Length: 382
Image 1 (cartoon, rainbow, N blue to C red):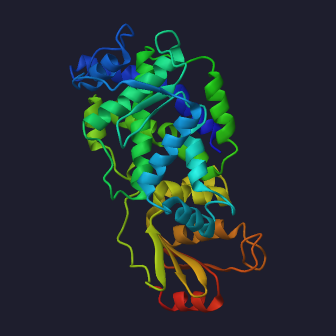
Image 2 (image 1 turned 90 degrees about the vertical axis):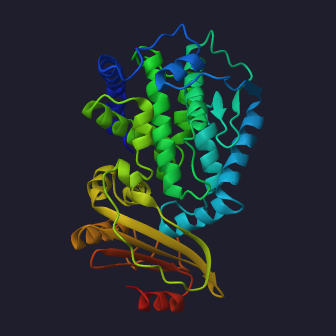
Image 3 (image 1 turned 30 degrees about the vertical axis):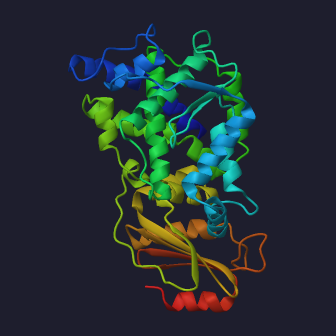
């Protein structure tokens, strides 16, 4: 986990937001610092320099309804069976432990300790039945976040229907970071001294989830805010301009541009073809080592894609990951091998055929149901 780096990030957030507002105000490119006499909608519109219009009404719902709506939104985004296939792919890649359920974990990531949620596909703002932004400061902060996401959707900052998974990760990180920055700006740059009961509950739940989910939940702080801070310190820039220029994938946030990749072999029937992306690749390496080792390798990432497929013998997974140098590819392979059994298999499995090898700058991971499919895949690799 990233306790110390995350703490340093959060400690720098208030200074960052204050500096952005001060520098931008001097340059005439941003509105003045926070005025908490404004409604959350008016404040967000002012900060983003967008028309106020008619803000969406708040819909008070029960916790059960909120969870149902979040779950339905996930299903709509990933498609029928999409999260089940990703669960299986992540298990075979060893990004997740066995026996996981990505749908439930993504639901927990979004619903745990949730006082309000913005439905990005419909534009609805759902809040707890006792939601009271006029009298409860943490509810006002939540509403600032919800209004930020609402106004960004109105301004057409939406994901394409065919966006890949890494685009979804990057979108959540950047939009969540901007929402947090405006929350802090609304508090005149001050961070709350004590977490709320909901924040404490949320963090306790997230700590029980796998590294992938916990870090995706924290991606606004770990990926988005550092990007916004770096850009804003380089030159005073309006928020909307920063967002328009923001990378669409996590490799842009982590400064590791991709190279062309060799095509994946087309054996069997494809169940899912996707990319982990730079950030999820870092989390895969972190699961097999630690944060410092994974972070040191990430700048050398140059692209990846995987294919989950099936034939008459079972399901299989192939992952190609390109690195900047053969040495980086070898180091990544060694991290992945570090948790294998002495026989070279994944702990707890006896019926899978697993292979990690490098070919120049390319790292290959094969996880097959039978030795014949593994042998066939090895023969068609670049």
